[in-house]
Amino acid sequence: MSAIVFGLFGLIVGSFLNVVVLRHGVRSIGGRSGCMSCGAQLRWYDMLPVVSWLALGGRCRACRARISPQYPFVEATTAILFGFIGASSLSILPQVISCLILALLVAISVYDLRHTIIPDEWAYAFAGLAFVSQFLLPLSGEFNPWWFVFAGPVVAAPLFALWLFSGGRWMGLGDAKLALGIGWLLGPVLGIFAVFGAFVVGAIVSVGILLPLPRIVRALYTLGITSADIGAGGFTMKSEIPFGPFLIFSCIIIWFATLYGIDPLEVFGLLPLTTF
Image 1: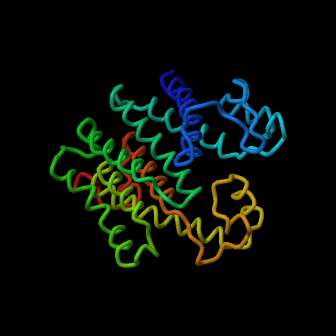
Image 2: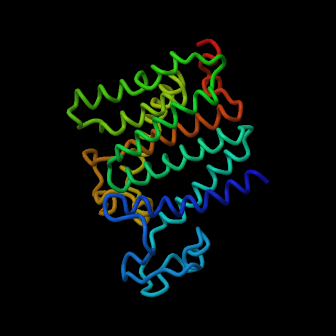
């Protein structure tokens, strides 16, 4: 029951996250929602998470312009993630903080996909919540506060070095700021493991996009959250790919595994976490 309640709440939060992502730096998040094409104000029954998009066939009721699948995707993803938190054995306060962290991570992922940049205030808010979360629910054995204080900088250091030595060509500074929170959320060992996992996932996805698969390219483009290069079918080795979503995907997988009693290091045949 708790998972269902959290999942339904996640649908509502996901709908709000879409508004935040689309309006950040453009206009206030207040005011009525309207069609991005014709400006027609949306009625309440046109804003039901996921349901309205499906009922309308992904098109505006007024002008029949296509509505980006980003909307139901973000709503459904947030609902699923919140559902997992609701089904966990966490007490209510850690659950609330975990949901706040997930909401930030979803917003950061989508915004980075759309604009290839991570807003500083969102990255710092995530880092702050991640730091606080470790005093409420340490993920590994006996909690050593000094160990976790330095976990953020340790995990962020490799990405910061890539940004510094490449002059921002290989890695954005926003990714290093994001890794700061990942280190505090997962600890130094799992945090570094998450960064490594992000590079692996990123490489697999990048190779898949580079292959001549026009249907996949078109599907990515219809989400409305990919770069113009991908949408135009002109994606090359020199095209910019946001790394933040890969970091976040890897972080969430490892984080949820630990919440459900699975040691990611043992799963991949590495040393058990308890030996560190």
